[in-house]
Length: 124
Image 1 (tube, rainbow, N blue to C red):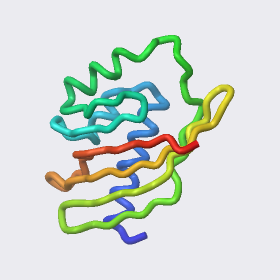
Image 2 (cartoon, one colour; image 1 turned 90 degrees about the vertical axis):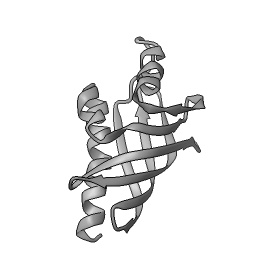
Image 3 (tube, one colour; image 1 turned 180 degrees about the vertical axis):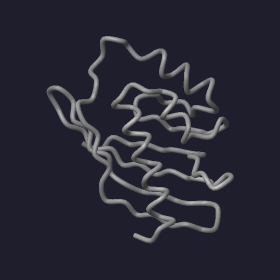
Image 4 (cartoon, rainbow, N blue to C red; image 1 turned 30 degrees about the horizontal axis):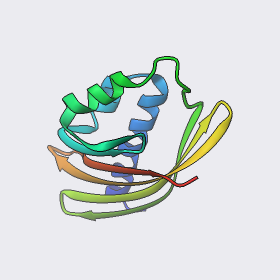
């Protein structure tokens, strides 16, 4: 993996680390304010941070929380200040495991990679 791809991959993994830590600010540092999201558990397209926060806040507080997240099989293409990332996310829940296909688009802004679109599909 070249250095630009490695920087993008580090940003992807920082989101997952922030999620496991329950640190929304750490996650949001890597997501553009106007990002769009196809969430695996929410059908309509999420447009921007306010809608993303509403989806997050609607999740049941006592719902199952992942014990671990492992991003694997990265395929990353960098085109100047835009990157396309494809990977599999293995989600370990208390009594199950899910595999999620993920495709995201990233934009470099002032030397920092921000996710501008993310698409998730549960595959097993």
